[in-house]
Each structure stands twice: as C-alpha cells, then as structure tokens.
Image 1 (cartoon, rainbow over the protein chains, first blue to last red):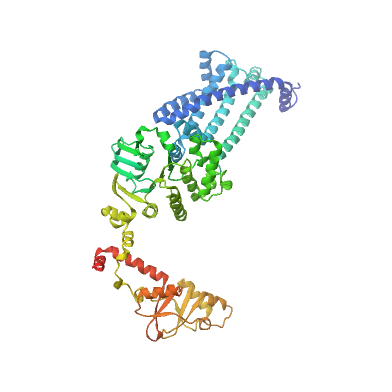
Image 2 (cartoon, rainbow over the protein chains, first blue to last red):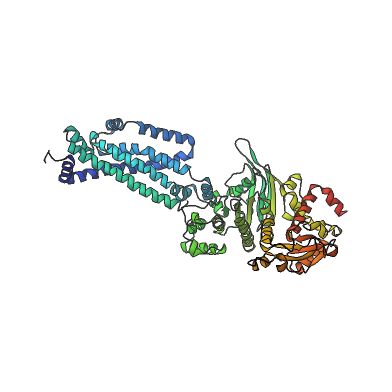
Length: 221
Length: 392
C-alpha cells in the first residue's frame, strides 16, 4: 500500500483487499440489528396495543421505554455487559431495548389515530376484539408501525458499531482497530459501509412504508 | 319483533341517556327513531346490537332476551349501517360486502356469489366494482355498499344509524327511494335513526319520536301528522307539514279566483320593440315569453324566445312581426279551478287574464300557482282561527 496515494484510493484498495473480512463483518452487523429489531417488534407491538387499553398503562409503558431511550448508548451497553457478560447476545439485548420506544410509540399512535367509526363498524358487524385488531386496526396502523421500524433500524445500525466494546462483532471492529492504530484508512473502511447500511435501510423501509400506506388507504386522497 | 321493556341507560356520571323505555318494533317494518340531538335515539338503537349495554330492563328479539346472547354472535345476526359510511378503507368492495359472511365462515364461492348478487341489487356492476377500494367510489355509491354490507348475511333485523345524513341531497333522495324499493322485496325489520323529519315521513312505517331519553309518541306517520301528541311533536313535525296533511279541509266556496293568483306585472313589451331589446328584456326578467300589449294595454299577442331567435338576424324586424296571437285568455274574476282546467287541457304553461276590451290585467303561470299555495299554507299556520272559520 502506497502512503503517497490519495486517501480515497487507499480506502478503496483496503476495502478491495479485505472485502471478505468486511462482508463477514457486515453480515455480523446486520445479524445483530435484525435480531434486535425482531425482538423489539415481537415485544413492542403488543405493548403498543396494551397502551391503547388505558391511558395510565400507556403513560407507564411509554415512560419506561423513554427512560431506556434517553440512557446514553455506551452506558446502557456497559450496564448490560455487567449483567449479561460479553458477546453477541448482550448486544442484541441492547439493540432491542433501543428499538423499543419508536415501535411501541408508533404502534400506539397508529392505533389511536384510527377513525373511531371504523372501529365501531368492525364491532357492529360482529368482529371479536382479536378479529377487529387483526383485520382492521393493525392493517390500518401498519404505515405508522413501519415508520417506527424505520427509525428503530437506523438507530440500531448506528448503535451496533459499539458492539466491539462489549465483545461483539460487526463493522465497529474495523473502526475501533483503526482508532487504536491511528489508521484513517481503516476508520473509513468501517465507517463508510456502516453509513451506507443506515442509508439503505432508511430508503428501503421508507419505500415499504409508502407501499403500505397506499395499500391501507388505497388512493384515499 | 323487538320488544323493549322498561329499558334504562344511565352513565357512570349519572346522566340518564334512556329513561324507562317501552317499545315494540314490528317485524318487517321500517321503524324510524327520530328526535333532536341528544334525545337518545342512537343509544336506543345501539342497545339492540349491544354496542351499548342497558342498565335496566330487557330487550327481546323474537322472544329471546338479548342479554343472554353472546354480543359478537348477536351482532353477526343483525345488519348494521353506520353513519359516515364506515367502510374499511384497506379492503376492496367485495371484501367489505362479504365481511359478515366471512366472519360466519361461509365458503368462498358462496360469499362471492352473494357479493355479486348484492352489488346487482343496488345497480352496481360487479365486474366493475368488485375489486375497487371504497375511496374510488362516490359518497352515494359508498353508502350503497354500506347498505348491502348490512344485508350480506341476510339478517332479519337491520340497524341504520343516520345512514344518509352525510350525503348530498340528490344522493340522499336516491338512496331513500332505493331503500323503500328494497324493503318492498326484502321485508326486513329495519330500525332507522334520523333527525330529518322529511326522511322519516318518506320511509317510515312507524315513527318513534324521542326527547330527553323518553318516547314522546310512537305511531304511523299519518297519525302523527294528524294527531300530534303535544306541542313538542307539533313543533318537531313543523307547521307546514301539519297544514298539508289537512288540505282537504279547505272549503270549495273559498276557492280563489284567477285575480288572486295571477302575476300582475309580468314581462310585457310594446309591439314596436326590436328583437334584441326583447331578448334583453327576457334576460332581465328571467322569462322565456313576453306578452305584447299596446299603449292602452290591449293584448296583441305573445312572443317566445324561440320566435325571436328564429328571426334574430333580421335587424329591422320588431316583435310585432314575430308575435303569435294569444289563443286562450280568461276574463278577470274566473275561478282558479276553471283556469287550471283550461291550462291542463290545452297544455298551457301560462294563461293571460283580460278585462273589458281585451285589456291585459295579469298572467297566471305555474310558478304563480305554486306561490299561491305556499302563501295559503304559511298564512293558515300562523293562526288556527283562519282554519276554524273555514271548517265552520
């Protein structure tokens, strides 16, 4: 590697030389993010639905999720490490906690903004509460839930770069090794793919959100 | 048959929405619940499918106390047409119409056939509309879908909560007509909530008038018009409707003459007027015919817009050149009945009233007849005395 070449050429060469390693790290990165988001959806959507049952419950649940969101990510991960030890699982739990608030809040708002008439129509034609939820409320709230997922995904991809600090893998590894070695090229080689991942996730989920919106309100305008 | 016995509904804050209602809703009829807002009419209706639970009394449908039935099952047996339409925006028309049959687990083919049949029933082509979304339909079409959704599982009882109130007047009339037509075939027990007395009179077999959570009067529309129970009913029905229900009481000797009805200053012109002037005059007076009179107001003839436009290019012509003679006139003092007979026999849109020497006095038009009728009823309702004297 020639130190006299421009930086972007050296970054490109490094990425080309280490493509296998980088792709592996991207895979690890995405695996953590997916697991964290999936958990957050599985737990967050029911919590969002629960919020709809009573204002008090909503205040408690949203308040708790908000506290988690406010904790600095490094501090939260350090606390989790003390409790759960090092490794992949700890990171997934961290990402899960970080993704909770946007998903709970958007599920709650999505359900709450529904036209009361439609809920009444559903009850009036004889839907059970579960049928009402599955056939009417959730499909119509889907664009909102997708928006929450989109926010959560972008946050999670960012936070996941901290994984190496608590013994996880992912693109953070290249960035931290670059930081330790004062090697700009390595820092870029880790940071650029991480940024691209976040941008792609935002774009793809944004597109999906638009489609759901269309589907649920088909040309309502 | 739906029977309310001593039904009450009190909310936690102590507000009594329904105070001790006894009511029998007859099978195969349209029963209209009507009253000012907050009178409990919608609450009463929602008690029937248990969207609202009563705090006292019982409601029986076909002898079965609905409190003993599972509310979800009960609602699938009762059609429900909601105010503001309430179609599910994320479902196609077919899905919306078939929602109750699918909840009842009918098989797919049967649901599809039923949906097509129902779309046909309200004049919407199944192939065109089946796969559309509600937002792609007009308001009137959407509420037709709302109505057939309620009919889908062929329930005996249908509840309709101000179903047409959000529609424009023309669609509303159409849907009312359609409902009456459908009901002649279907003979459902329909409970219909509205605040519009015209709507109630148009569709109801029985009208239940409510106020402050109580039933004020429940009877056939005809009887409510003729024998309103109290002043509240009278004011709610409106004076004009009460008047028109009693029209046959007008004594014949008081029948008006043409002089009472005619327009005294219709659009007239002198024979020397040019054609362009004539058009301008018609435009200003908003009429399509001018009567041509000379300086002594002797009737010379009549000119319609068509006569004028035919010859309009000829700048030198005057209305005298294009006018037609007046074939039918009635002398001043003729009774209106005779004039009307003449107008209907000869298919006249208007009829000139003349005095001595063919002097023009006024014109009877269809509009003037209608205005006269309107005045008659309005003035009659201001005091019952005018009527009393007529009857005596």
